[in-house]
Amino acid sequence: MQNILFPTPRTCHFQRQRIDFSSARWVHIDPAFSADLKNQIIAFARQISPAFAAPLAVTAGAPQQGRLFLKLALVARGIAPQGYKLSADEGGIALNAGDEAGAFYGLETLRQLIDHNGAVLPRCSIADHPDFAQRSVMLDISRCKVPTIETLKTYIDLLARLKINQLQLRIEHTFAFSAHEIVWRNASPLTAAEIIELDAYCRQRHIDLVPHLSSFSHFQRWLQHPEYRHLAEVAGGSVPRPNRKTLALLDSLYAEFLPNFSSALFNVACDEAGELGQGWSKKLCAEKGQTRVYVDFLLQIHQLVKKRGHRMMFWGDIILHQPALIPELPRDIIALNWGYESHHPFNRQAPLFARSGIPFYICPGTSSWQSITGRSSNCLGNLANAARNGIKHGATGYFITDWGDFGHHQFQPISYTGIAAGAAYSWSFKSNRNADIVAALNRLVFCDQSGASGQLFFELGRVCELLPVQPENRTAFYSTLFWNMEKVDDVLEGNPPAAFKKCVRRFDDLESQISTMRPQTPDGNLLKSELATAIAMARHGAQRVLAVLGQGTNRANLRHDLQHIIARYEDIWLQRNRPGGLRESTGRLHQALQPLLD
Image (cartoon, rainbow, N blue to C red; front, side, top):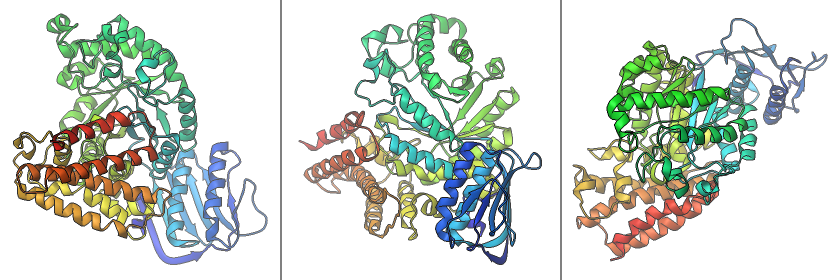
């Protein structure tokens, strides 16, 4: 029975005896609950009422007549933060929680029990709380793709069902700063009002919307404009100079950006600052060392953040170049230890932060970016590796990243395997390390009783495993899709043509099964289109290789195929996302057409 719960609770005990609650009438709550929790309980009662003989009623007073279905209470002792205890017997269901977040998560567990059993529930007892206090997801909204508010709210609802309690929308240039329109023009940015709206929507679902703004790297969207080129470390680069002028700009951006969030946290990013020392700061880095200069400027950014009452988070890759500097970090800072391969050395990196007493999150990813298809096995391996080492070395948070490198060409459902698995592993790794992720996708994400939707998306992410040699941080299909069709060895990477033929056959097989999908979500038809188009894009990449080798179709057929793909891609984009960035993203696909026009 516990297999129908996701994430699987820490402890579950189910008995054979079943209790029919269909005649129950009441949900009894504590009058001291917050207005948000009361509203959540009222909505919950309304949603599950079809399983009962009459609609459930919610009351803060003890009902004098009618059968009790559920009583909720907060208890001061014996339950960990965000934890709950749920029991069902003839007297009704008791849900005791350590705090309101725990009550919210307990309701989600009860909802899943009712979804599976209706109002006839097994006698049971469940005790549950998370491994990681912070279970976060980062969605990249700066690599072309900015979702609509409706898409973001649906995404937030999914995260809440999975017991995720933190969301970061990664921003480089996609916030409408009032004095910097040239930076975000045509990008369809989020406005301050939209951030405020999303922040409230998240809070109601016990999700902390954490501001995330690239501050010392990935700044090319600013530095490419004449107004900001004087701040560039190197001409045409992505790292700003570590000087007072950059700090002044950042301070002004923080002043406008941060007040729109209720979160006490702020991720300033500062990752992959490899250009540091190659231009303006070359002499300084030669004297002090690149990492020393980086840390000195990071500490100045920290002062800006602290001045505004926030706790700073930053990506920890650069400081790991010189781990001896880690102890110099303030204890109110949070380091983000990231890596995206299944074999990433979290086991060596995490202890460096832990021994220094620096709070840190362990940060795996969905393995979706630069893939088209996803990389299912690497994804699960990377997520499990992170959970295992995060628990072992005392990480305070688990941070699932979903990037959009080089045009964000993967469709949203490609990332669902990683989001669901990461949510489960971060909630209780011991209980969920063997969880059936495909079944969970079908139940909670796709609502597909046929089982086909979750299975097909997962299997699409395994096609790359048919190639004996697999590149890191991408799939071969991604590389071949955008390849100029000139030097074939650059994309074969040691893989034989026969392996690409095998991949094409597998893509054909998966495509033939799309008609078996039965998703019962509002975006059900869109899911099918996204899967079909992802298959077509990846297959096209494989076929480009075979065409150059003289073992596949001709270029004219490939041209027609890619033109059709581009039209579908553009249509799908606009069903979940804003138009800003679409032209740039499809621009790479149009470039891939050029070798086919000869």
